[in-house]
Image 1 (cartoon, rainbow, N blue to C red):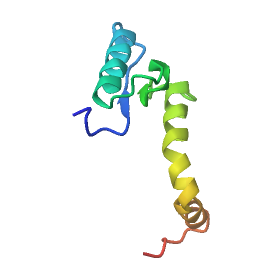
Image 2 (image 1 turned 90 degrees about the horizontal axis):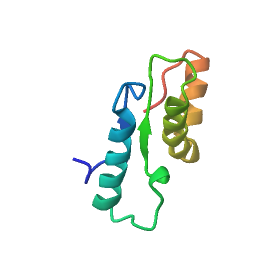
Image 3 (image 1 turned 90 degrees about the vertical axis):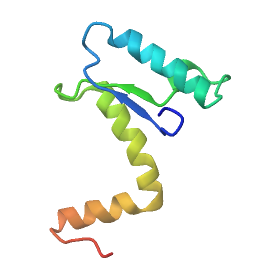
Image 4 (image 1 turned 180 degrees about the vertical axis):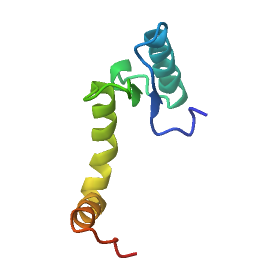
Length: 90
């Protein structure tokens, strides 16, 4: 499944063994995508603790997901519509 993934999220990264899982998934992602020159920390694999407010993992995930949307204009349209209680035009 990692062959088709653009990114991977491992929730509950505060639990025992989560850091090992994060490392192992990053290594496997690196092998599957043939990104051998890229550092493991740069792999799009995020360890999150969704229950925690302002979690760095969730924030990094959000930034990674928001950038492509922001560059295409999709993000601004939906923020505008949400702030004006309108539905976006389709």
